[in-house]
Length: 489
Image (cartoon, rainbow, N blue to C red; front, side, top):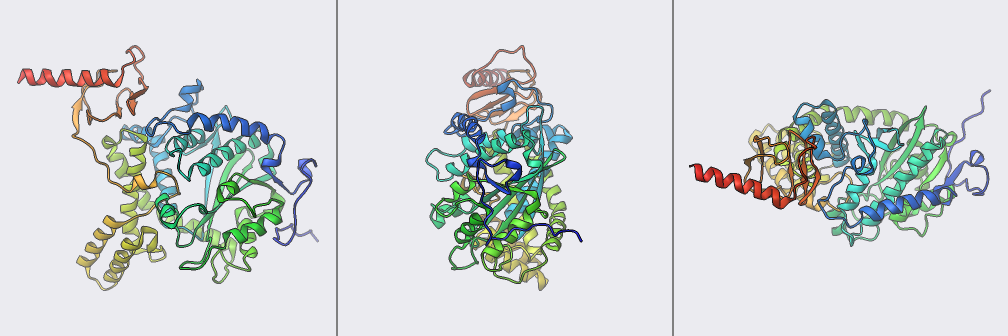
């Protein structure tokens, strides 16, 4: 008879001697590995380079380091939006996948599983949705103010990205899962947490498991509750202390950012079901919860399949949101504006979706909007069409939702305020049919891809012969053309 596969048990200690051969260790705290010293040094150089950069100063890492990367054509969502407008299928796919991730994280805060496939380029860089993860981390660091309490989390996530790349190069992720526990912040007030995008009703946390199968990387994420809804106290810290003991990692006195910065390698023999097995361990440490909630436990494997089915139900909305974002490309002239556009369009569409799907907790849109969503649900049941429309409109106006927590979420809640849109001529390729706000410090040419962000020319586009122009010179060019038009009238 075949021997049963080993399983994780929070009462068992899987700790080990760090200097023991890795292939005999069931669990390994990554920061304690000798090679992690070099990985952290590389990460620190990267973090220091991009921390405290100007808010709108975005870069293409592939352009800066001279790497030719045919697998990662877009350094940010803004570039993808403009390329998709011109018919680029790869750009459209990148936007659609970003939208799918957003709608799931915006509407389902606990009791859900997702899986994202990752690629690597010839330099070993991780690529998600057609964008290098280094670009993602760089933009996150540049958009996080130096005094923000979110900064240590952004820095820890960047370190983990470098760690995953390094461990993948060594082939260790074929045998081990890279496990990260991302709890809600523990150094913020309720108001600060809501502003940053945390769902404080359940203090939701994410358990992420990254692994390789035949060199193909993927990340599974499980969203679990850090507390029961309402006024109940948090239980995630207590649970993580026990989970850490089981894995041989001391999480007891660590902040949530420090826990993120302390990933652990867990041998795949202990996790035959992937992230589900970590959810079970978390539930057992709390005395038998289900995804951190005190409710009847279900079959985990069947529940995972149900999560996939639930995500498929978002398909039509993902398509609609993607189309609306691309159709509004003329309003996107900076990476932060692309993020705001995604937020606004996704929030509007998902308020509509939530009215017809009562499995979505209306509170994910904030207390005011939740009241209107519930009123709209009741009106829909009673056939009061006008009331449905009225409350949906109020819900859209008062909604305060977010996808993953970050330091710029509060900025995303405001509407784009732009000056007049005018016809302009690109000073690089001389295309006279470009449209935008001539007073904006952010400009982008749809023809040659020249881009000015925050007053700095970050790309001169495909026309290499044109001289590098400052923002002032671009403005002079625009003003000269406007004067010429006035003189000809």
